[in-house]
Amino acid sequence: MADAEDNAMNGYQAAPTAQAGEAAASPDARQPQKGVTRRQLLRSMMWGSVGVWAAGSVASGVTMFWPRKVAGFGGKVEAGKVDDFKVNTVTKVAEGKFYLVRLPEGFVALYWKCPHLGCTVPWSPPENPGKFHCPCHSSVFAMTGQKLAGPTPRSMDIMKVEIVDGKVIVDTGKITERMNFSPSEITRA
Ligand code: FES
Image 1 (cartoon, rainbow, N blue to C red):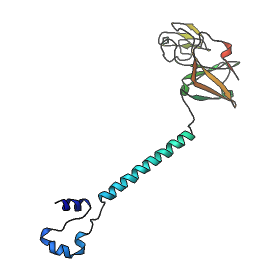
Image 2 (image 1 turned 90 degrees about the horizontal axis):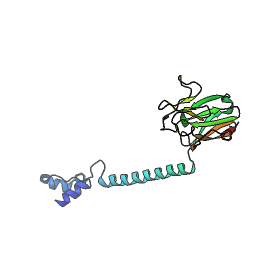
Image 3 (image 1 turned 180 degrees about the horizontal axis):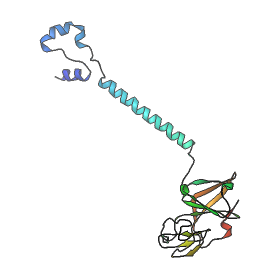
Image 4 (image 1 turned 180 degrees about the vertical axis):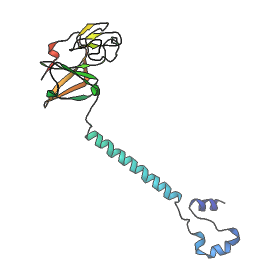
C-alpha cells in the first residue's frame, strides 16, 4: 500500500494486478507519467519565491537611491513662472491647497483652510467680491489673508514661497500661523 502511494506521488503508475506478469516484462509499464511531478512543482515554487524576493530588493534599491520628486500637498509645489502672475491677482492652486497672491512687491501663499473651524475659504465669492469669505461662519479676509471680520481667531495661514530659476515654488509642508499680515511675509519677485 505504501509503495503504491509513493509511486503515485512520484508520478509512477502501478500496473493492474491481473497483468502483473506482463507489466514486469514490459519496460513501458513503469515509465513516469507525463506532466508535473511534485518535486518539479516544489522546485518551481522555490525559484518563483527567489525571483519575487530579488525583484522586490531591486525595486526598493531604486526607490532609495532614486527618490521621486515630491509633489502635491505636503511637499513643494511649482505654481508657475513669475511672469505668469499679474500684479494684484489671486490664483487658486488646488494641487497644493493654497492661493498664490501676487502683490506689487512679490508673492504670498495662503493656505485655503479657514483658521476658525477648517472650512475651505473661497476667493471673491459673489456675496463678497475682492475678499476671501468663508461660507461656514462668515469670516472675511483681505487679499493678503488679513482677518477683517467674523469668528476667525487669526488671519489666514501662510506657506513658504521661493523663487527658483524664475519659477514660484511653494512649500506646502511649511505652514505658518500669524495673527496679522506683515510685509515681511512677502517673497520678493
Ligand atoms: S470655519 Fe470659517 S468661519 Fe468658521
